[in-house]
Image (cartoon, rainbow, N blue to C red):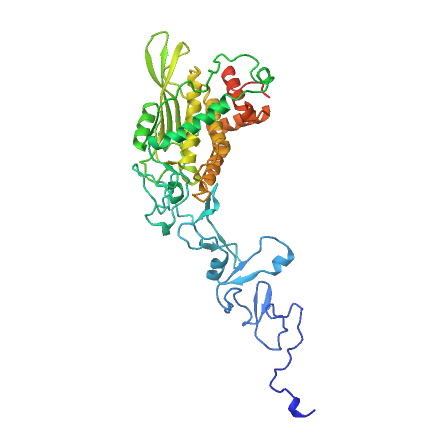
Length: 464
């Protein structure tokens, strides 16, 4: 063949590929006799072939980590790849929602492996995954003082700086929660009317014809009035110090100084989070024996703060319905006022109101002393959940990008998952009875449950 058609500039063809164990695990070519190689990850490599799977720079003689697939199949095991620690962290480590950096890795169990340790909010999950040292709980070592939103419990990212608004009593609100915040008593009146109308509907819904005998089996001693709320108690929104002062006077106290502590739970007093009391129902009981008015707090309702749920008012916390100095001989009860902590987003403020209004309903129908704590708090928590899940959606939902709906879901999660015997256990007992009876809320299911509990002065022994 004429040399004109030869191609001497082309490289020679590569040697045949080798698939035996003595071939390079990188290029899959057989080692030339006398060539240098290294051993790593149970295989042999050309030094230039053992490279970081991300940046492709050599790893010979350098520290490396291995990325393991989540499954344990043979194919996944064979696909284990080495990385520089910094490259592996950039690619696979969770990103901290506070500082924006990858969550630091720490050495694992050998063989170049490593692991990440992080914390995340029990509801927001991966959205609130963060480095372990980002918390503000004083008394827990290692915290860097990162504050959280007093409503949704999310930690403030560093990029937000001081952009989060601070309320007069020191609590912080994230920008999302501040969109629908209820600022004062006047601002709360339309919401108050909505909550009363919702509870009037579910507490006075006519049950099926055969439901009375099955549920209560006898007219309750404290028969429900013609209306769930014969009169409308005045509502006042108050700041944190004022609320705590009323709570202390009624035998409830709040831990902390009002600054960035309200996302941590103090499981005291039956499991009630103690930082804030979010709502109070103030009553006067007039007894026939002395014919004198004695002040009593018919309902005291404390709230959690923190990764779990901070501003959901007494919703997840304080003990409500604890009677004051009233006795069984009381002849009249007057609900003087409802107090609710100011600065709550609309959805959560409505849930606190639903809880407190249920206490007020029980007082208005003469239930004094209060029902056992787990029974009364369970019914009030159930009313709050019904408000969050079944009341009409906020008109601001569309303009706020759907955040009110997410906040409602957060509030419902906190009620459902609360671990205390009084609030969590009481709620779950009430919800179980409601579901067992099988009567929908709009068909009188909640009304039947409340009437049966009042008649039994506790959980009804047979219901369903």
